[in-house]
Length: 355
Image 1 (cartoon, rainbow, N blue to C red):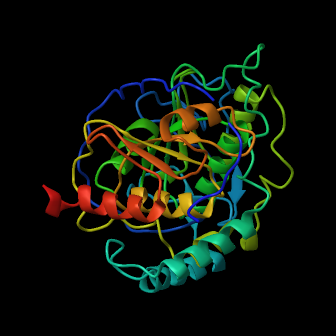
Image 2: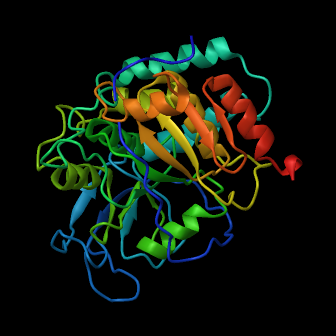
């Protein structure tokens, strides 16, 4: 057994072209902060606010005290207009992150103990039930109930091991939205630079919505925006925004930091075309594949196909079944439905050794 079954339909949209080129950048030091933010100055316009120009929300003058359990932030710019203080939980996370890497089994491309992989991923799924398992508002975006996605894909900059990014992916599953995913693992050579250019700082998750001209940090704000914009103003499911240290961090701990750090033999340049992954957030087998995509820093189109999704017919048409994960690689014409084969394919195809 390599996946779960559910129900879903839809057509894919051509991904929009980002208005800048990929550039290499040095890796940043991994840090998680509690901080007070008096004001955020957006580079280039001198205005304060939490959103970039074009946002549908009013600019916010922030005076927040965020707990370390509410946001993961990384920064290389000491000139940021934020007062940063390190709390006890920050010290705990600074201690845990190296340990997670130590216990993660080292090189992700080597032979794995898949019994252990499945066991820890299944436990992670149990920790997050019921979030990220069902599409509740998949057809609310149109009056006739047939339209699923907005005309242009949403763009999410995140990394798989981050509990706050997980919250956004769960909301995307619940709303039955697809998105372009730009993995930003620690040591990223491309996508973290893109986030700095677009938003002015390395903070995750980061949403870009080309349909409304909105760009937005903060997982809670992103979730609320998605439900207001694409869920007809309905509220997120109960508990989605109240992630605790147990439910929010448990998958990260159980998976020993998989999907957190860039693989040292991954290619420096992305493939010409984005891969496509049929998945849903709380599927234990799809989680393992998304971790590999993150560790390789491979941008991809995430097609959510949870129970109740409107995308089921599309998946059946492409794969002949309802099982996820299912990978489509337009660069090689490869289509794979078994998660173990997907992982092997990704590390063999997109390593430096394959060049």
